Image 1 (cartoon, rainbow, N blue to C red):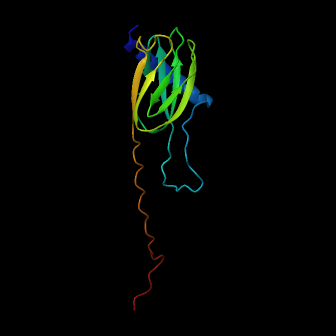
Image 2 (cartoon, one colour):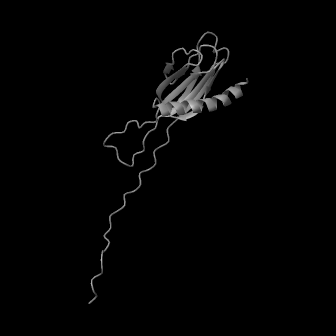
Image 3 (cartoon, rainbow, N blue to C red):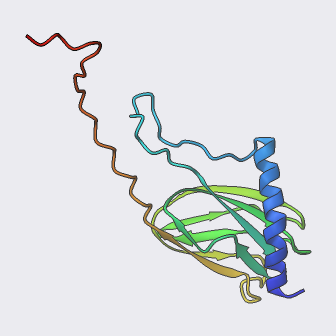
Length: 163
């Protein structure tokens, strides 16, 4: 099966797997940094969830460009060999444990803007093509708060008779 077919197959499989994790309550988008004093017009910050497929010998992230902030990588080993997932860049180096065939792991990070390399460092897997890269861009500014509407007096009832 070609790499493109692996990626296409992973798209459907990851959608099914991610929806199952959401349904089971294992993964969810959550409000980060909100407090009781937050203004109602403040924009909630949602956790970005990125599926990553590992195979013999490729790394296929669900996206290669995303906004900075909290990110959970849902990593699944769809290959026959043991693999891992390492992300490194901007002084950050984080990894999943080694994953046997069919295994998975969640790696949650707070990513700053920059370029990050993705690798599997088991044996000769880097030399065999288990590399990738993602670009993290600054998060979009929240929408400007809507201006407050000034209260106005509106007469109620019948107007006073004219004299």
